[in-house]
Amino acid sequence: MAVDAEKRRRRQNAFYKRPDQRARRARVSAAYRKRRRLSILERDEFRCHYCCQVFASEDLTIDHRHPTSAGGMDIEENRVTCCLACNQEKGTMSYEIFKAIKHPECVPDWAMDMTIEEGQDAVN
Image (cartoon, rainbow, N blue to C red; front, side, top):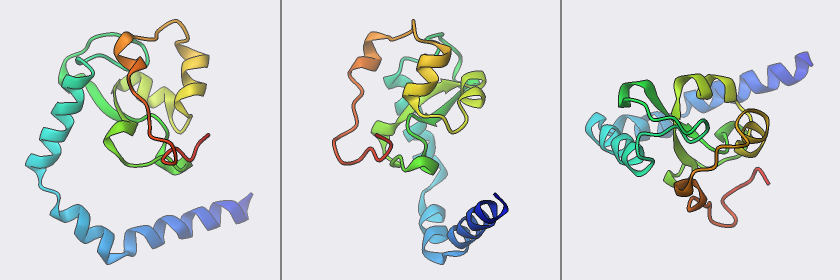
C-alpha cells in the first residue's frame, strides 16, 4: 500500500511541475471560467444532478460525472451541476455508483439527454 501511495504522490507532483500544464491553466481567464460555469448551471437549471434539488448558484459546484482521477475526460459533457453536500459525498465515485447508492429515485428528464461520446469515457 505504501508503494501505491508513493507512486500516486510522484505522479501528482510530476503533473504540477510540468510547465506546459501550468501555462495552459494560467491562460484561461477568470471571465472565461465564470462564463463556462454559468453556462453549465443554466443548462442544468441550477439543480443538483444527484439529489435533484434547486439551489442558488453560490451553493452549487461543478462536478465531473466520471472523475478525472478515474480516467474521465475534462470536457463539458462530463461536467454537471452538483450541490456541496452531494459533491463531498461522491468523492471519487463514478456517477453510476453514487446514484445507485444515494439517490436512485432521482433521474431528472434533463439528465437523460446527457451522454458522453463513445471512446471518451474510460470508466466503463
